[in-house]
Length: 273
Image (tube, rainbow, N blue to C red; front, side, top):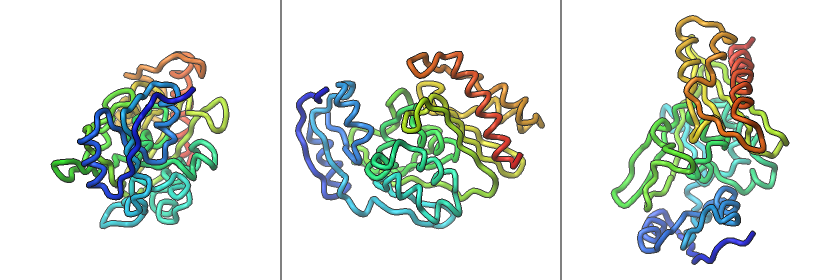
């Protein structure tokens, strides 16, 4: 299909993007375009103006910053997948980025665009929620930081305001094992279900992709593990509190089954079993 008519503006800086968002009706940011443009073609999204921030070069980087790893919001998925810093210090991020779409998508799509789009079937939001990531946002009132747990608010909805620009993603280096497993009908498809697991100091964070209206944490699994349950027993609680949809990729019951299976496998892999 063809998108509805829209105006186009290119921003040369974060501040210019903020100003343009405030001066145009129904304006949306455009980064890599691999999240927004398909929605526009289906007319799920009908922005009045696209504000292109894709050429703001200072938003593309991966570097260690104190006790965290900072990733600029315009960093391409390919660069996340091939980053030596992330491979060495937070391997689940580089691995998950390598699972996104196909090479064309990874060379064009950005981590910030994926996060800001808020798609519950997207790989990276679920992984970042599992990592307790922090998102740096700049708006008319200045800079603020939003924990991943507070960022994803609904289907394609986030805590970003109408004039906010996501500028950076911050994660802590990992000290233990990790795994990210997803099931999809084809290699380049969105996950029918995805599970991220990060273990350290006897505890575990477990995140779920495509099991509700937002990325989710499998709190019942985490609590069971903290109480001494083995991975197989804990994984039986993976679908507690979830609301998976039924669609062409699978029924809700099928997704619940997948969540339990993939959670067990992810925990065993992360624990070295």
